[in-house]
Length: 371
Image 1: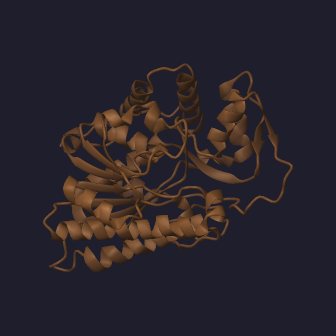
Image 2: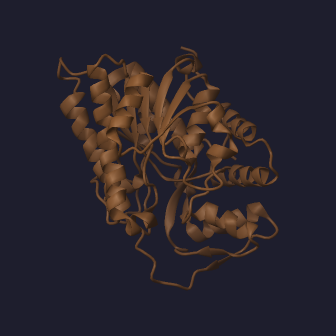
């Protein structure tokens, strides 16, 4: 095995067939680029990009990824796509990912995030029964799957799941559904069960170049700066575990690789959160973003007080991933903001964003020293 500085094995990924749901989204595009850079063959299943602009289109991903543009709620289309692809590894990222949107569309949020998980796992179950050789499934959920008690310490994988808002509770539901399928249909103690290793992955508040979503702090900030307006902060004192998008993606890739090699021993939930120094308030993050951006960036606090409830503090304990998988964050908050601002400025200058993004991935893979 020839490992790089992150513990990823280029020979392992070269030629691997990966079925990725949600590939047109922010994280899905970055993961597709990384997989492509390592020589994997990526087939994506997703709706069309939800934003305009989108990183998927910025990076001309249709040129390097095979796509099924369908809804995760359409089980027949999903199952047919999975059967036809015959993947080695499945990574499930398709979701309704926004807390505020979940208040406006709770039924759709539960349907997409919970029944979407059922559809994906059922499609895998049917595929392997029909002879597919899927070795590993990674279901990406969220740090918000935990029943948040506003603790000052990080949540561990064994802590209680739950959620006040529909998004958080739907992600807790996705975790429970995955555990049920893992124990009922992919149980290594059952000699007749398919040999598929199934795990979940929970990350913190992910930021980085290419996120254009509404009601997310960094893209809202970039839009405000571009429009020569001050950034409007809704919850200045709320503390979040900020991390660059490549940090959890590295965790998902390492987990999928080791699930395939080590099997069911790693089939469980995993946290991939940033170092504690990256858990800062919304106001401090925006202040540092403005400093990094330079001239034209400023912020004010939104005087409105009737926003939907969001947690004040939430952090992850990633000790298990560090000790068992050998995963650890590479970039601190300063490096994260530098790379993020660089990406948006390069995009505004109309650079080749696929090449630019691949250079950021390459820098990360070479050891990505913390700065």
